[in-house]
Length: 84
Image 1: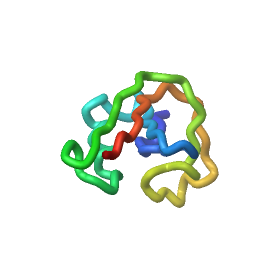
Image 2: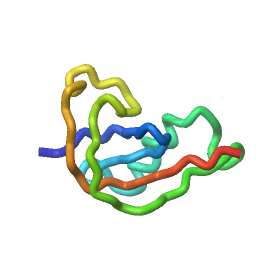
Image 3: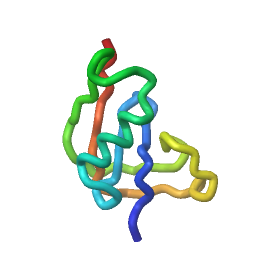
Image 4: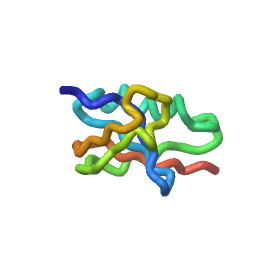
């Protein structure tokens, strides 16, 4: 089973996209599409690395009512916003 792409945001504002759901390029584009500012003119998105984390639909960047109770323990791309 493939984990939904998300992207997911944690309480600290970091972004996560499951590795099995998207390539790095697609994952980054998904996160950039959720930002409230323009990249790169108003800030940038730093790639932190891949980490195994718990993701849940409560922190998902896009609404997904069908998966609101779901949680996933997956390897994910980790991004951090760096707004100017």
